[in-house]
Image 1 (cartoon, helix red, strand yellow):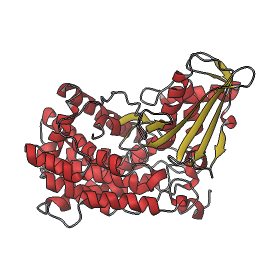
Image 2: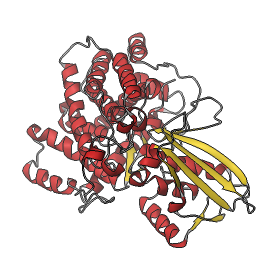
Image 3: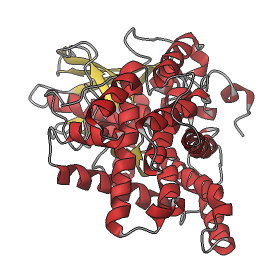
Image 4: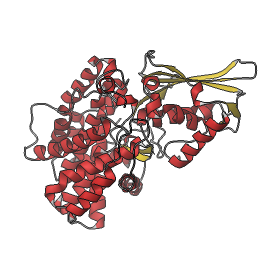
Length: 465
């Protein structure tokens, strides 16, 4: 069954869906499961990528805030910052149940060279009673995009999305897990890709609820950009990376007040970078489908609303309809990557994050531009084909270099992929399914040091200064 669009696009906080959002959800789940048991102390172990880049991605703080009962979809970033400051000051953590235990972030045990079999992003949480006897233990995996899985799930590999909008498990009218099956559904029904996706979503909630949910997601994307272009200074983490969005916004607003198409790609660059600067600072973003790639879809969607003539000149209702169709189409493509490969940088490298997002954005834009299902599928394929092999090598384990600029580059690729696809008739040599499988195989063959461990690539060749 395809993954719901509301699982792929969930509201959370930065800097990482797999290293911040997922661990916070896992810790909150553990706190809820152990709320009634005797708890005098708690131990947290992080493994693999969560351990090697956890400091830079805010994983330790995310786990602590989750144990307090906060969840990424509703936690206020400012409240999160204050709670962590109080924790470090007092050395006391108030669990969601109200129980107070001794705890500091330095107590988290890191195992960067230990990979648990199920996924590179693993964490184990334990509680102990007054005698030091273990009273509860759970092992979780943050499998990308904020999705989590737990040892002991009823079905192996079952995901616990933790999204604000619960997803039912009943059958949908047009199940698909591949590009070929999606195209077949479109051919059988005469519906566009967004129509098939909408029919599946409305199997469990009303069309009005689907539209309202997607428009809220878009509003959060826009709010993220608005906040970012008004913030200056440097990003946290020690690299002293300067925030550029505010300066770029001022220049573009002065140089291009009427949005001349000649400046279109500069606005795409700005939007993508603004979102990822906000993400890097721990602000509120939409996972799309991950935090590390969160700027691509908002940037391409903004391009569609500004430069696609019928949409840009349309009424509010027509523009809202374009937003809904774009996100439904992007979500349909994203579900294929989630089902058949991975959207986790720790599992397949950045091709799984930025590559998937570019593919989703290209498909959404092709749909809004009036493309056929075959052209939409071609746009998605082109965008991923030219992100194959992309490594995840964040300097200092921070989602800043190369992540912020990488979002801008990929957003431009997505726009180009959609426009290339619409110049053709949808017939092409490489199918979406073939490129998804190639991405999966490439990720499996990729050295671990290039998969969000900060042990290779730019992460080791650029001095931390």
